[in-house]
Image 1 (cartoon, one colour):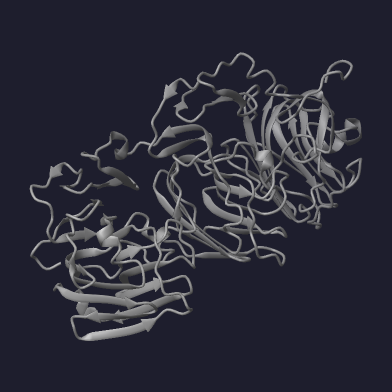
Image 2 (cartoon, rainbow, N blue to C red; image 1 turned 30 degrees about the vertical axis):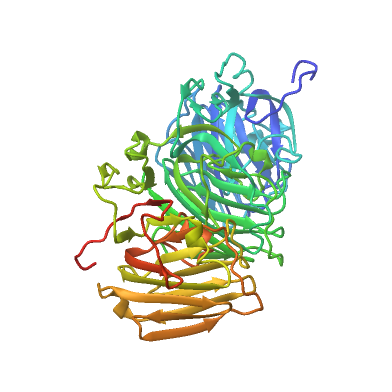
Length: 636
């Protein structure tokens, strides 16, 4: 820009002065139909907004969107005669307007702002348009040559904020790594100077939000128009220009990926999750995004993306649960109770490598996201839970960076759990995890007497680290005896394993899976699974259970009668764990058991013995516990 072209300007939101234009790529998929949306702010009533043609003179096939005396006209010719469709009302000069054009064959409609659409047709029998020229925005190189066809000899004066053609949002910067503009002359930038007088507090920085607005990017712990507000955040709320950043997934999801996310959107557009391989917009990536209120799951293994879309749009301002899975090339998407949707990535590659950082709620630089995501909007709303490959993400504590995160309104913000209880959100309600000795909804009740026969609720457990207890569990032998009165058909009764579990890690476990009582262990050379199925275990009565292992051999005894036997493969005979024993469940059951068990035990336990002679004091020997109450005499 400048009288001598001495001024360099990066054009993102082009400002046209009536003497210039931009050249976007040739529209290759508009032969039969196309949909165009342009958001613009005109400063004059006449001017060419968008144009392409088969030839330089537009004598045959062409289309144009033009301002003519303040009205918007869509003109097009399929080769046998021109059609002209004009908006009902005039544009608003100096304000933002939005025009949408939709064409199928030789029929088209135009809609300006919130007016009713106007329909029209091109003349003749031909219904296809051949386009060989670039798509010109804001004008044309030789206006006099096309004046009679487009209805004006003037170029557009004003700003353009958005151009979307056939669902693709054009980046109007110069085409290199990120932009789509192939050439242009005498075009300025609408957002120039917006941040010059802006002061963002507490380490915030000013960023261009749109052609005429800015936003302060506030570091974690601060928010507000100028980052003036300080917050403690339990559940993050994303404002549409926010994100949280984490260590990337790397090579931990090579062949299989499983993501669950619980969120409440306030708008129907925005990036929920993204992780990529590189910053050059190429290669592997995985993303979850809202587009037109539909949830989209996309991933690329390096040879072409899978694009999987929810069957129905998502309702705003309500909580949704989304789960996506990927095995090799194949992916699935489930939203709430909608039907499962499926899709495959292109090509032959089957592994996913994600070396860059993971982003939730948006991205720090959309120029570094894959071009196949085609998303530059960040998520607006609250995100309550993210689980990746059975491992819950500690959304706030594990973030390494983030901006513009605010607290989501939720009962947990008021810290309702007393006496050291932990508030666990579930959509719009919560549950308190109460320390041992306290109970009730908000852990407000101090027990007069600690439980003698503990009752567990699926989110409860007792922890033991006493050497006298642990030595009777690890090593070459175990003899575990207890009485149980189970309520639910799934739940972990007993566990000791390693801090970071893998498929070859040592562990020993007792629990229910779909009604089957299972005694499982791995000594490092393969897993043993000994199962017992009988619905009589859920009759509300006490049942005697004995699980015994001697090196590789083991058996499970029920009520002193039924005996099931089994052995572990390989040659290893010693159990080595982290010397922490859990009874009735544990934190993050699914993650720490690698999905073997999904929840804690629901029911009562009494009279636990180890090694035939050691009676475990269920409360007295416990280091700590959570949500443990006294078993009632009534049938469960």
